[in-house]
Image (cartoon, rainbow over all chains, first blue to last red):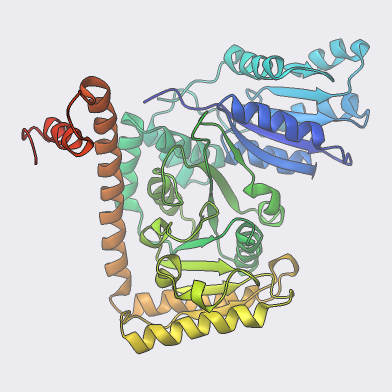
Length: 139
Length: 320
C-alpha cells in the first residue's frame, strides 16, 4: 500500500465569518494530496474535538480573523488535550501579529500561517507539524 | 482522559471500541481504510460480530440534500433512543489523491446530538463508494451502532454500488431534476427501495413525485421488477419536514426484509459484491502492472495487446 494521505480537519472557531482564507487553504491541501475534513464556519471547541476524534485526524487547522487568537487558540489546544487528543497538532492561520507568536507557541500551537503564505509554505507547514509529531501509524 | 491509540493491536482497539471508546473506533476505521495486515485482522474479527445493524444507503445527485437529510434523519434516530452512525463518502482527486470531505458542514445537528460521523474519500474507487466502506460498516456494526447510514458521493445515473452495500437504498431527487423520460432511463432509479423528493418546499415537487410515480407504474406494467413498489417520501430536510415519514418508511422496509427472506438475500448479495469489488481492485492493480511491464508493441492492435496482457495476468497464455 502507498502512504496514507494526511487527514486534516479545517474549521473556523466561534463568531468569525471570514472563510475565504479557509477555503483557499482547503484547496491548497487537497491539491497537495491531503484529505481535508472541512467543517467551515462557527464551530465550537466541542464540534472540532468531535471531528478530530471521529475522523482520526492527523492535524487540525483553525482560521482566525477576529483578533481572538490569544483567547481561542489556547482553548482549542486545551479542549483537545482534555479529550485525550493532545498529540494532534494545531495550526493557526489568519491575521496574527508577530508579537503574539511566542505566546501562541507557549500555548501549544504547532505553527502559525499569516497573510500571504504561499501554497508551498502552507503545505510544508502542515506536513512539518505532522512529521514532527509522535503519532504512531498503528500498523 | 482516554488512552492513546499508539501501540495497541487491532484486537485491543476492537475491545476498546466495543466498550464505546470513540478514538479506538476512529482508529479502526483508519486501519480498515489503509488496508494491509491490520485491516485483514480487523475484517476477520468484525466479520463474526457484525450483522445486527440495519444498513441504510442514501444516494442522489450532488447538492440534492443527502447530507442535510442524513443529519436530520440520524438526529431523529438519537431522539428515539437509537444509536446511529454515518459513513459519508466524498470523491478523491484523480490527479493528486487529495479530497475535500465536506459532509460534516451539513451534519452539525447530528454531531451535536452525538451521532458518530466518519468522512471517507473514494481513494480511486468508482461506483459512488470507497473500497473500504463495507469494512467500515462492519466495524461500526460490531461496535453496536444501528442503523449504519452510508451517504454516497454525489452520483449521476449509473453509480449503483450503494445498493449492493446497503439493506435499504434511498434515492434522493429534487424538484426540477428531470422529466418522465429521465425517470424511465435505466440505472439508479431502477434499484431504489425508497425515493425521497427533497427540497419539497420548492416549485415542481409534485411534478417530480408524479414523474417517479409514472416510472414506477411502468415498472409494474412491464413486470421487469418483481419487488415491492418503492415508497415516495417528500421532505424539506433543512426544516426537518417529512423526516419522520422517511424514518417510518425506512423502518417499514426493514420490517419487510426481516419478515421474509429479503435480509438474507441482500446480505448474501452484499458479501458477493464486496468480494467482487476486492477482486476488481486486485485485477486492476495487476492490469496496471502488466501494462507497465509489457505494454503495447508495434504491429499489435489494442485488442490483441489486451488479450496478451490478460493471458499474462491469468497465467493462461493468450486468452484470445
